[in-house]
Amino acid sequence: MEDRPKRRERGDLRNRILAAGSAILLLLLLLFSFTGPGAAFWGRLMSLAGHNGISDVALDAPLNIHVLDVGKADAILIECEGQSLLLDGGTVDKGDKVSDYLTRRGIGKLDCIVSSHPDKDHIGGLPQVLQEHGARLFCHPALAEEILPHTDEFLALEAVLKETGTEQSVQTPGSVYSLGGAKLTFLAPLREYDNTNDSSLVFKLSYGDFTALFCGDMEEEAEEDLVASGIDLNADLLKVSHHGSNTSSTKKFLKAVSPRYAVISVGPDKNNLPQKKVLRRLENFDAEIYRTDIDGTVIFSYDGEAITVYTERE
Image (cartoon, rainbow, N blue to C red):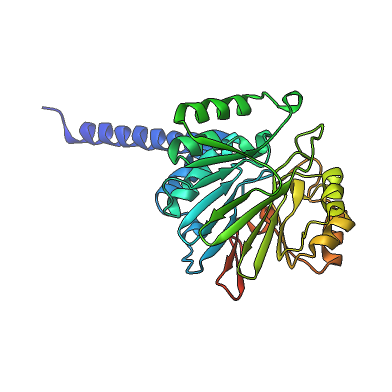
């Protein structure tokens, strides 16, 4: 018969092996968390578990504009009177975040997706959103064949649009789309340009006395054309073009818009965006500036009388 001390020693050895194995597993999980796929995995897990921060904010106002924190990219959700529109979808690696945000907001199928232009930091996440949520309509600008990017992101988006059979619509200046009680009037591109940035769809949202201007990555040449056209650009809220690059947001353009609020969708970048010159120009027009790299996701909520701003990192 085996004596008790030997059984105790074997039990202690087994416990030490299990403890060492658990420690190694935890270490591997920790190291995995610092990788890109690991961070995305844990972020999505937390989101699905109900820990998604600002997306859970109760919003009673009829119009809500969510500028999602997706790094140096764009993804903007607009909700109005029960209808929803997504403007751009961030990069491929942010597809999970954008899709989960929509789920947390209780959004199933989107009423509309607007692609401002086909650069990868604006369309990368859209294939996943289309597959997981779908959209009744997909709007995009008319682009000359020679400036189409034909990147992996662009080809993936084309494939998913075909696969899902989503209705597509080319928007031109003067086109109008209704979202609940809000009216979206497309203003640009006014002509053909030799780059996708200046070819961005630009539209002005109007709801009651509130207006917002969304500019994609429009740069100086297209801004000058818009100002020269005499179109009313004045808006309460400006989605600052091209992540705060100095190639956009000229003095003439900002004077025409005169925004009360300005929001910049931006993240860590070798170009040090947003540029200080752009920030100074916005400050000179007394705009209240919000940045997703500092404030996280930003929500502009309009109740018909006043604008309330919610930020993820208050």
